[in-house]
Amino acid sequence: MKLFKTKEQPCCCKDVDSKKLESVCSCTSDQGIKVLGSGCTKCVALEEATKKAIEELGVDIEVTHVTDFAEIASYGVMTTPALVLKGKVVSYGKVLTVDEIKEIVNKELHNM
Image (tube, rainbow, N blue to C red; front, side):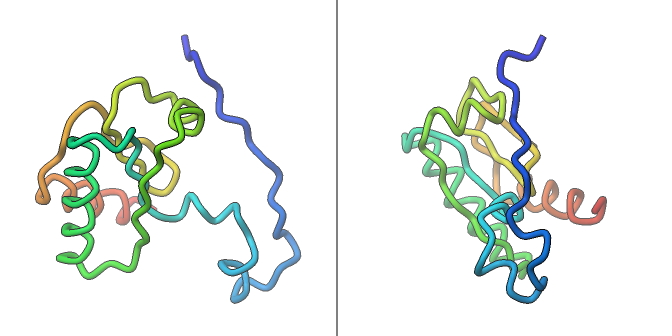
């Protein structure tokens, strides 16, 4: 049973030129990596490891840290820190190493 349902919001950018999309549309926020957590030591450690992994991979992906509990809950996450890649929860409840994050990012990017 899923406790929290994510609501699909209609895209505000259906008729926007894709070159202008990132500067116009807020629905592209799921295109990066999000670290979900309150800002505790473990959450900060996951954020730092994620940024280092992305830097080492040379991938152009934005990393953001979400501390809003309502937004965290909208992903169905009850244990933080959690890692969200392109809108999909890929890890929760532990601090991943840089190598683990690199493996996850490589796997997810090749599946898209």
